[in-house]
Every structure is written in C-alpha cells, then in structure tokens.
Length: 223
Ligand code: ADP
Ligand code: MG
Image (cartoon, rainbow, N blue to C red; front, side, top):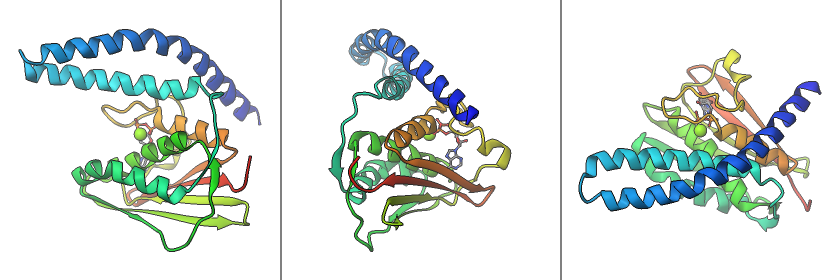
C-alpha cells in the first residue's frame, strides 16, 4: 500500500541519517562518559544527573544504530522461550520497582526459529519494558507462545496497564511518538523494523484502562 511505501521510505531515510549522526555522536559521548567518571569524586549528586542524561543519549544512539545497520543481519537457530526468559530476568529489577509480576507460559514445547537473537532480544526488552511502564500500580504481565498453522510462531505479551485509546493506537511506531516524560518514542518503531526484517508482523490491541496485548508473529522454518 502507499502508506507502507511512505513508511519504508521514511525508515530508510532515517537509517541513512542515523548512520551519519550516530557515528558523529558516539565518539564524543564515550569520551564525555570517561570525564564524567573522573569528575564523580568531587560532586557526586550533580554528576549522577549528568550520567543519567548521557545514558539516555547513549540509548537513543543505540536504537538508531539498529535502524542504520539492517544489513548486518545474521540468523541462527534459536529457542525463543529461553531468549524471552533471559530478557525477563534482565528486566526483573525494573518490574520489581513497578510492583509488576511477569509470567512466562512454559507449558508447551515451541519449535526453534531462525532469527538474529540480539535483535529479537531488543524487541522483547522494548515490548516488556513498555508493558511494565504501563502499570503504575503494579499488575501482571503474561507472555504466551503458540503455533499458528505450523507456519508461524505467535508470541503475545499481555499487560493490565493503562491501555491506549483508539486514536493513539495508529500513532504507535511513528518515530518520536511518546507519552512519557523521558521516553524516546523509538522503541516500537525499532521493534516493528526488526520483526518485519524477520518476515514477521507486530500488532497491538488495546483497551483503554484495561490493558494492552502486543502480538509478535515470526515465521517458523529456515529463511
Ligand atoms: P517510549 O517507551 O520511549 O515512549 P515506545 O515507542 O516504546 O517509546 O512507545 C511509544 C508509546 O506507545 C509510549 O509512550 C506509550 O504511550 C505507548 N505504549 C507502548 N506500549 C504500551 C503499553 N504496553 N501500554 C500502554 N501504552 C503503551
Ligand atoms: Mg518504550
């Protein structure tokens, strides 16, 4: 469709821009981080804030780098349940802070898929982090897996958070669209880009004040 075309054009433009910008930002960023560390002994409070800001810039640059390097893609046979488990382990402190519990359905054995595990991990980090952040009063995140028509692996991340109204739903995945004070609005765009690069699909269903389900479909079998 024309809309998809415009989107892919925007993405490739962003990719090209990102390649240039990311390289120019990375080197001074690394050197700045070193100096901030040196400063820390003298004025710790002040420096902690600076460090946080630097980490934020670092995060944005890293997200952009993912877009800028779509061709450095390698696929290996991966166990998606284990991959998700390791991401959940990594995000446990963040979830704890929000009083959020994360459940992974391990009941059935899921076939392996061919994917770039680093990229797929990045997707789950972004999606689960969003789910956690949507539940200011705590709650449960359920992650489930199923096999569709023996051709697709479907992974659902379901939260009980604030949800997203219908008019905002269409804006998700647009660059810089965020409702958070310190959000980047890049997470979902990167997720979509990665999943589509794997020949899959990412879709979001949501009910305001009830919760959100992110459904990720990935092709089974070798690419
Ligand atoms: P960021 O998290 O930095 O804001 P994202 O691209 O990850 O950027 O998400 C964009 C926006 O989509 C978020 O700011 C939020 O408004 C909305 N969103 C994403 N996931 C969820 C979710 N699980 N529940 C409610 N809103 C969500
Ligand atoms: Mg996010």
